[in-house]
Amino acid sequence: MKTIAVYCGSSMGASEVYRDAAIKLGKELVRRKLTLVYGGASVGIMGIVADTVLQEGGEVIGVIPTLLEQREISHHGLTELIKVDNMHERKHKMIELADGFIALPGGPGTMEEFFEVFTWSQIGLHQKPCGLLNVNGYYDHLLSFFDHMQQEQFLKPMYKEMNLVANDAADLLDQFSSFTHPGLKTYEKV
Image 1 (tube, helix red, strand yellow):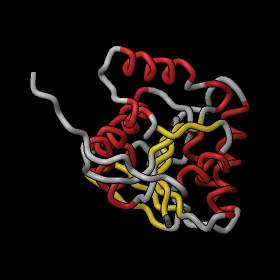
Image 2: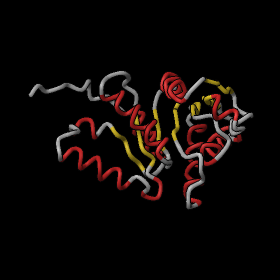
Image 3: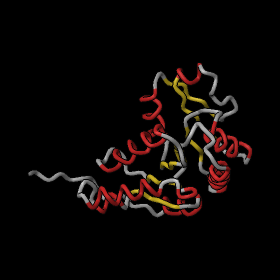
């Protein structure tokens, strides 16, 4: 692995623990010589993780749609800032550039991006690791919902296990290092 896409909030969240986790993740990426790929913004914990990687001497590739760049939230100090026309192009470019995907806490946009890469892995469009950095129990309810999806037979156990989870950045990246894709999703005819 050389690059990790990080999906996260353009807000700071209600607690300093989210900021602290973004800093810790940024430092861990640099320690492992991994390039950060992210949404290109200077705000929220998105900006914090990018600033940390840069301050620690790492590389950061931002991908930002023109709509958000025009609102002056793009980060101007990145190693590379790729401008795209829309959110769909942003997601596609980030998937193309990254060797793995981490979701720090964030809102609906973070969830939408994470679920897309998770689904794409499930159906075989890529075989890259996907994980949730469960800071302060932020994703506990979502993890319960994954259990519910499995219990109701809408998610096979092998794909539920494909969602890597840790409370600590180093632990999650260790899981990424040993990740083996379970294989393509098969469909049952009724």
